[in-house]
Structures are given as C-alpha cells and as structure tokens.
Image (tube, rainbow, N blue to C red; front, side, top):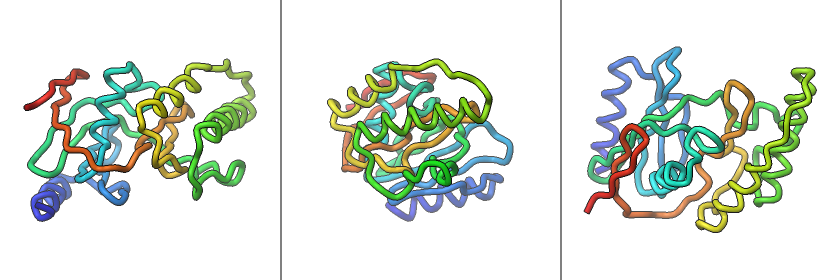
Length: 185
C-alpha cells in the first residue's frame, strides 16, 4: 500500500506541487504561492486530531484550518491551510525546537511568542486564555503524546498552531468535507 501513497505523491509533483516537509508518517505538498497545502499520511492518528479540531471548534484557531480529508485505502489525503514555519524559526529567542513539550511548556511558549510578537510589532497584544483551555482539552482527549517544536507552527499573523500533537495508530474512518465530519462504517 506504500506504493499507492507514493504514486499519489508523484501525481502531485507532476501537477506542480512541491514538497514542503514531512514527518515519520506524512508529507506536505503545495503549489507555489498557494494558501493551502495537501497532507498525505498513513498509519497515524492525525485524522483523529483533524476530526477533533472540527468537532470542538478549533479548526482554524489553535489547530490548522481543515478543508477536507479522505481516506484512500491505507493512506489519507487532507487539504488544510498553509502555515509559515515551525516554532524553530524563532529559535534564536526561544529554543523549543528539539524537546517534548508538556502542556505547561506549551502555555509558556504561547505567552513567550505573544510577547515576542508584541515587541516585534510594537504592540501590546491582548491575552487569549482560550489557548490554555485548548491544551487542557487536548490533554483530556489523549492527544498530547507527541508535542514538540516541530509540531507547533506559526501562521502569517504570528499565531501559534498545534499541527500534530499525537502519534499513535488509529483505524477510525470518516470523511471531512466543507468543515463537516461524516463517519464511515
């Protein structure tokens, strides 16, 4: 089945998509100057996280905006918002790129980034206490097992986005289309 995923990725490259990055279970592609990316993955629970984001109202806030997700045999293809970079891009100020983040570390990181952005922009940014609630809900849902600097990204506006906080196998199947989740049997 790995072959089918590779064929899909080759098709994307043929259509002008460029690989932006990847991890152990997935790769991300986009066309130049596009505000969306295509995530292709297998054998992980990222789709469960995407579903959780939508069902809990966090798609497009503290999680990436998920436009669609569809399973193709043993792999999935998702369309989601394009993000700027991992928090490693501000590594000179805050080195969070290579260690596991506990929920308190993530909350402190959020505050540090907001302070850094405020200094950078010359603004006093308003506090957003909902981020702490988001992390606590993630933890209660059992979705915080793989929080590290590579799984926290930044939007163009500087806001933090938790992209892939958990790493375990899941065989749940559903479809996401236009921000709605439909469970498959």
